[in-house]
Length: 321
Image (cartoon, rainbow, N blue to C red; front, side, top):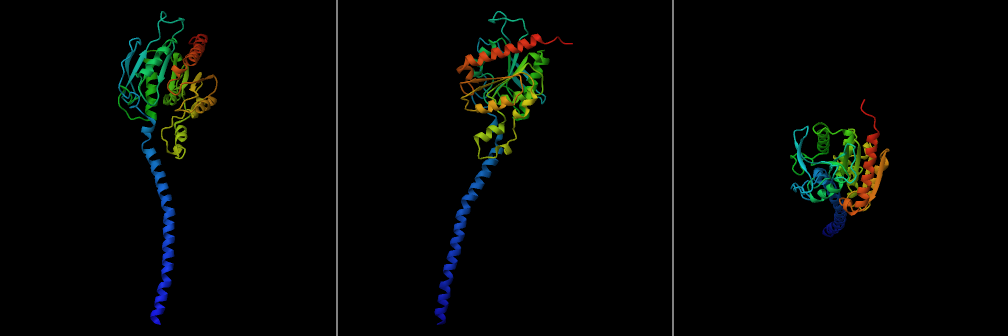
């Protein structure tokens, strides 16, 4: 009898143990995917934070740092521009066309366009040279500069602050070394360069500001591409053009393609709405990089008319003193 009782007691304990084990297994099966998901999410966020520079700056793409010789019909003067932190930047200076070259010569002092490019390629790539020709035909001179770490410029840590220093150094070089009046300089920023251009325009006096394919901020762009990550919290590089829109009083022209696949068209509209007058907006086609070729009549026609208004302002300005 005692043996039978013990057997029954033992057999009664086994189901309880099995149930507890099954419960623990079910809990683990539920928790394991959650742990994996949380770990993956945290890992992705940390990876994004650690590799932010490679997401924002692409100096090795679209031709990388290999410089292409200027075409024979482009009167390029290659110069070096020093920065406050002892780097040397590569730049191209293309003078305005002579009176004989211009379809409609003018006696006004020429305007100069300081061009700040996007996050990839360099100033010499064929696509940029193709843009230079019709730009110069508008009667302007051009200065194109490669940021630190791009093209033939010196190596330097790529940061938002570094690009701001490069733009300011180029502007100061134009006004001091070349003696160009700031009222004859147009700041032109494309893509990432739009963020650099708004920073410069908020701190210097110039004839005007042109932005092409512009964004509101880098965190806004990132949040649109990776909506499942806390990009606005992770981002250290801001290029926050929207935040300084009301600090830019000079005339402004925004160019944006409706089919821009890199920077949403709506973002350009949002930035334009934040700017105060005087301002203009041109809707283009041709994507992020090729609107000047695909929609050249609108692109250069708009620029021609807008630049003419700047020349009128200059003629009507009172003399110094």
